[in-house]
Image (cartoon, rainbow, N blue to C red; front, side, top):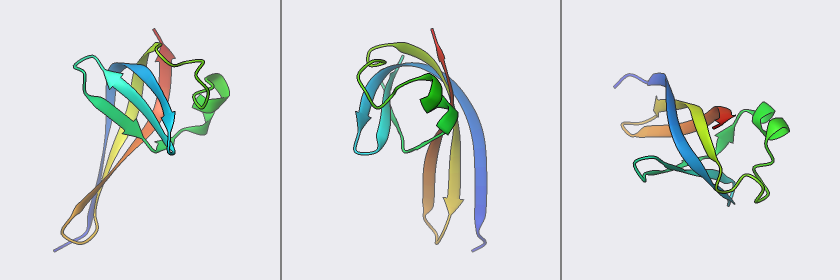
Length: 86
């Protein structure tokens, strides 16, 4: 099987739930939970996501879903690209 990599950009709305174990967690409007383990460092300049200051605040969330097919299993990484406070 051939190796492949796919990326897609997504925009959703959600409430910041907090930072734990290296992940930034948001609860989306449909109550799905999304965890980001990769983040654009410029977001951390604007928002202090590692403290509780932004917890409970609503954001427009722009992220990239990266899918790598390493060995017949898809490996999915969600990278937080940008946040806009609503």
